[in-house]
Image (cartoon, rainbow over all chains, first blue to last red; front, top):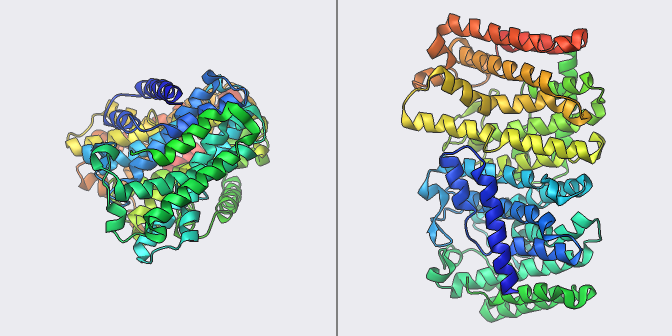
Length: 287
Length: 287
């Protein structure tokens, strides 16, 4: 899996760089390039693997992988803004609004969202029907009924000062981080016109495991390794899977979700080896 | 034209309300509904008229008209933010960040952009090829080589404190307001698969006339009528068509652009009567 992940990283970075280099020069373009640089690329990897499992070529899947990473990068740039989560560090570097200005961060995030949809119209993806399915699914996953909805709930909970319970956090994270992960993991069947149900079940479990692991890293992680501030959620008195379940309980819940996720892959047999590995990696990572 | 414009306003508002009512309830949805309420709907009108000229039904064009208004509304919500133009009044009402918070305004703008792309996948539009052309063209018009690029230039010019010259302002406005107007006016041929060149020439001229009229209204307009602050650009020492050409010069230039725009419509004959009327309306309006 690590070889494939490394190759996906290189190819997706090149794809994003190509798209951004074609834009007019200036702070806006520089900030966009900065924002899409680096990261684990787990979402891109999910796109490429789900494509492979459904007979879609790497060449056809690559613009979709780049789109999901551009969308993800936009969400991080906006979430980091002072008016939102107010983070100054991301991937070990100053966040976009710290390095430039709030205005440039707002505009760079806006334009990265636009770029994501533009990438989904790349003719390499294949049939227009597939492109339309992707645009519709990405909009559904990332908009006011998906990712942005989850982020709005998160901010509302912080403002209200009432910590959420386990059901509410699970639902919130299903939007905030889960919806885009589900889009990524079902991109292959969406392109091919196949049934995405099994990969959707996998992704739903993976997304929660991923978020639980994030909450664990916020407590146990090393800032020098994670590249972002740790202890932030706990310090803010924010309800997390760790605050609600305890560290051991959260670790057990993450393992349970990984098992649910890998169960959903049985249909694919050995071909889904990389997705099995990814599910384990998601809870064993230190970054 | 005014009858058709009134009908378009009603239908586009209903279309946007339908899409937004389907979202999960909360501040985010309320802020989105608030942001898309009202406005002149000139962009929606351009979509509907360009569709009619190319044999595209109102039913097929309506989601596209709603998409362009959602996209426009997102740009206004973000442009009004304190980190950007810092406007507290829009369409005679408090701006979104004043009525809610900066965070809600950022998220509502984000989700309105997403909604715009989602609306372009509405099956009523017709062939998937048409939908893909629309998504690609809207992304091109509104992203880091179009509208957002123009907004970034505008903010850079304000920060630098060096007023722009006429060529620079014309280029900037071609991105900031012109690109979306050109998308709207060419939506009909884009859906039908026809040549958009004539409508694009019309829209380029119309967009500049519209912006010059805006600059004139910033000087001569009545806040109670325009529903936004006037004298703001002049007060900020910002270069505008009026500061560069004088009031009479700007009015002459707006008339010249309108004449260029209507010349471009000759190909359509009498069928383009509404677009002729719109071009005159754009420079004669008081709001």
